[in-house]
Image 1 (cartoon, rainbow, N blue to C red):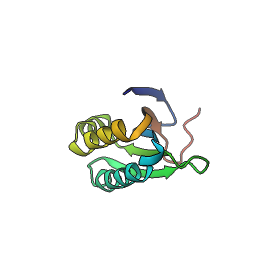
Image 2: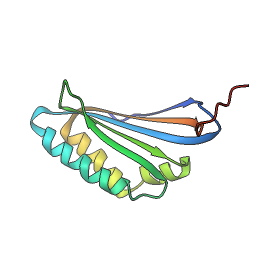
Image 3: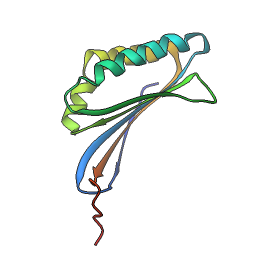
Length: 117
């Protein structure tokens, strides 16, 4: 099942878009899915507007893989969501995962300055 959720929360005065992709790999396909995530991570860091991309595996259940990305603007993130390598990741998750989830969070970013009155 494919779903994208978008949540709004505010920290400061500059927008950033946060993308979190989590997949629960099939036990016999975990290594293959992790290789795919690594390839996508390498390509994503080259995308215009991607300021951060982190990949991790759950320490209690190695079959749970999470990628977190930070984007400068919504328009750049939506361009990425239409890219060939993102579509390849979706295809890999559909065939190699038991379940997966995609969350997009819009937030304000405060560059170290307290914005409270």
